[in-house]
Every structure is written in C-alpha cells, then in structure tokens.
Image (cartoon, rainbow, N blue to C red; front, side):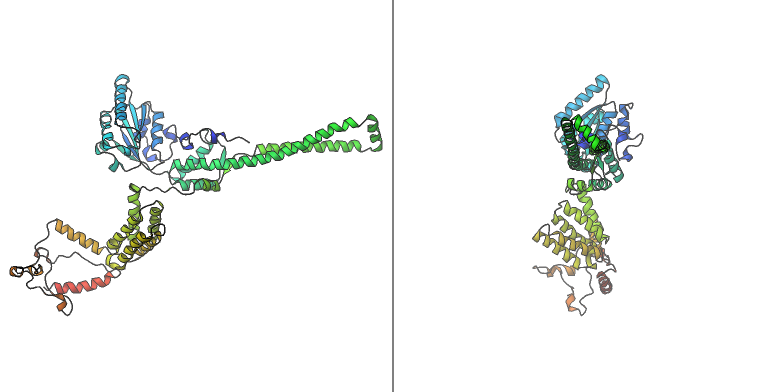
Length: 515
C-alpha cells in the first residue's frame, strides 16, 4: 500500500501548503476579482504603479485576506514586504517606507506592503503609514477582521479602497477540499474523502477555508492509522501463506533424500496412479502459491484510506461560530435577536439567543435587551411582558449559567409571541423631540407647586381641581403648557390590552378637551 507521505511531510499546516499561487486559484470573492478590479490590477505584472491603489481587506477569518495578498505577491513584479501589526512597531514601518522610497528612486521598483491584523495598530502606528501611502512610496494592502470604520484612522481610510470579503460558499469550500485531497501540495491522494465527510466538513467550517482544511488534515490523520492497521493485518495473513509455502518446500527437500531408485520403481510398479497423484499435488501447490501471491498483492493494493464522517466528528466536535463580543457579530446578532422578537418570529429569536449563549455572551446583557424590548416593542399591548423580562433578568442574576438559559428562553418566547405596540416608545420620543426643539412653555399656574411658603401669594395651585373628587376620576382642566395645548403624543394601537386603553383614552380626551 502506498504510504501517505503527504500527511506527514513536515510541520507546515495543510491550509498553508494549499495557499493559491495566483488569483486564478482563489476560491470565492469573485466580486473582488473582476477584470480591471484593484486586486487584479495589483497582480498584473505589466501594470504600472500609477494605476495601483492601496486597499483595506475586511472580512471574517479564513476568507482569503492573506491568500489574496500572497497571490498578488507571486503574480506581480512588485517588491513585496509583509508586516504583522502584532509584532511590528512605528520603527519597522518607517524602515519599510524608507526602503520603498529608495527602491522607487534608485531602481524604479514599486513596493507592496501587506499589513496583517491592521486593526491592532495604534493611532500613532497608523499615522506612520500615511506619508508612504499618500506619496505612493508603497501600495498598502491592509487586512483586518474588525470594522475599519472603528479600527482604522480616517486619514488612512480616505486614502484607501475598502474591500469587503464574504464567507466562502459551500461550493467554494467543497472545491477547496477536493483540491486539497488530490493536489501534490496537499494530501496527494493519500486519502479518499467520503461524501458524508465532505458535507460535514463544509457545514462545520461555516465559510472559513482555513478551518475546513485544518479539519480535513486532522480527520485524515485519524483515518490513516486505521488503514495502516488494516493493511498490516492483511500482510500478516499473506505472511502465513508464505510460511506454509516454506514448510512445503522443506518437506519437498526432505522427500528425495529418503526415496531410492528401488523404492521409486517399487512404488511405480505397485501404484500405477502415483505419478498422476504427484502431478495433481504439484498443481495444487502451484495454485496455492499463486493464490497466496494474489492475496498479498490485494493487501498491497488496498488503496487510500477513506475519511468518513465519523473521523470528522472525532477531529472537530463543534461547528465554527463566528462571534466577537467586542466586534460586529456582537451587534449584528443582538440586532437580529431583537428584530426577530419585534417581528414575532419566535424560532428566529431562539436561534439568535442560542448563538449568543454558545458564543459566551454575557447573559446579563441579553437580559437587559429583553427588558428594553418588552418596554419598547410590546408596551401596553401586554403589560405583563415587562414583568416577565425583569423576572428573567433577576433569575439569570440569581442562578447564573448554564441554567440561566431557561428563563432567557422563556422570556424570549413570551415576548416574541405576545401582542406588540410601540405607542409608548413613540410617545416619549415625540415629546423629547418637541422639548429639544424648544417646544415647551411654562407650567400652568394651577399645576405649580404650592407647598412652600409664599407660593399661594404667587397664585400657585389656584384653580387646581383634584381629580379624585370627581365621580369619574377625571377633571376637566388644562395640563399641557399653553404653547402645546391640544398636542398629542401617545396614540394607542388596537392591539392586545392596548385596545382597551384606546377606548378609555378617547373618553378621557373628550373630557379634557372641554377644559
């Protein structure tokens, strides 16, 4: 059996060995690789520096930021310098800029500077990039997993093109896996990838090429020892056949030493069929030998090991969950969670709740958002919603995780399925807008505080009608300032419990309107 040397050909990870050597090999990101696009122009060895612009590659891990930069480096005739923001400092950046300036002025050669993890650079370090980028000493390719709007300084953003990379599709990931299995740089055909294993790897990778290839390499290493063990067992069986053959040879060698010509003659005379029996025995021996050789060849030609879904499950126990508690995913997922509740899609809300829980999101943060949702999106359509959300927050703080997921799920289900109204939310925002715009006046005299000495002399509280003295509990008097008299902010909706509020409010406003 062929030894799968590609699996053990060094410590270089499969994902690194399989990096494309040109843009044609890059999987996905077709929207960035159209003819004439900035990246294609950078990779064109015949392109001149005035046509090249600096770019910032923004995307999740494993989508090809480093791959694109290195493919451009191999394809273009430009000098390529790579820095990592994790280890490089201002001094390193200035040295690169000076070398790039010298290369341009002395040899007419442009320099591509690839800056990985650019979001880790401080403001001072990013400032050091500006002269070289602005004056064209370098063409900058910066890679970041965080939103450049928050992690890259504005002057550098304005001097660069922002290109967004998308997670790889299932088809792209499948193609990468197939290539890695067959390519000499990868596993070189040392294993065969079962369909269910391929599907599992694609699903577990969640659009991350590096994770897909890393998981493939781990699963292949699990499959190979099993195949080697099976091959060894087959070889042992073939060895037993050769052992029998050697014993047969030994017996054959011993026979002629004890049989004389006289004995042979007597045997021939006494048993006419002896020669035929001997010939038949020799034929059987030859057949057994050939069969043993056939089994040995079969053991040697068993073929590559098969990576199964079970191997994948052993290598990767959990799907990749993209979530950064300080980054975009944090805000995107919580936004989708609240909008799913608002849209009454309880299943989607549960999904996003599960993503946050599995990613280790602070449960108190989730609980606070539920309380806000209950007040903002449900309001008086179901006054109990706020009580349930607050109770869930208290329960989470009291019992902690992982059991805290249960009251969170209960509150999520209740809020998503109950009646909705944002009337109170809209009311306070409209009132605040008027106040900020100067739409306010003095408090009516009869509503002013009359408890301090001298207040009555000023007329405070004069004419105020105590509502509880009325039979219906509502007194016809003015409450808003004169400038806002008749202004309405709260407009209840005919939904849930707010339907009753709407009917009651219409009666109240008719009474107040007569003041």
